[in-house]
Length: 60
Image (cartoon, rainbow, N blue to C red; front, side, top):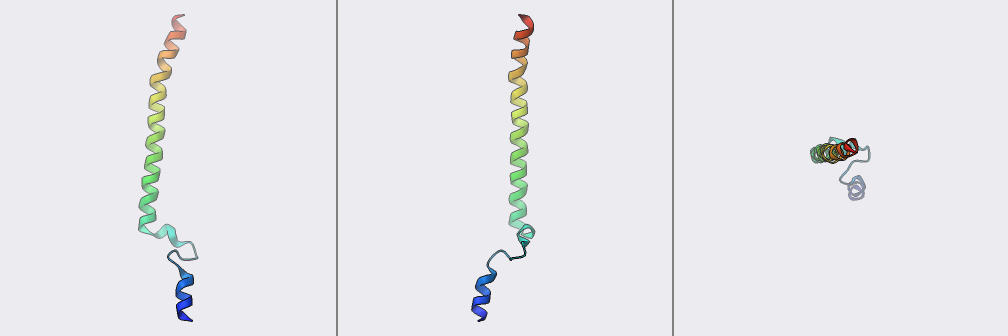
């Protein structure tokens, strides 16, 4: 019986305690940093590409 109980518990507890795992916390930090860097890169790129187009429309 105890062998079956061990198999049903699994690696991640059923109560959802996976957020307390150190590996999960590291992965979440890396993910958040990646998203933030991509958003800031996109904003930076838009500022370089929109400005010349606005200057061309002003000069016309």
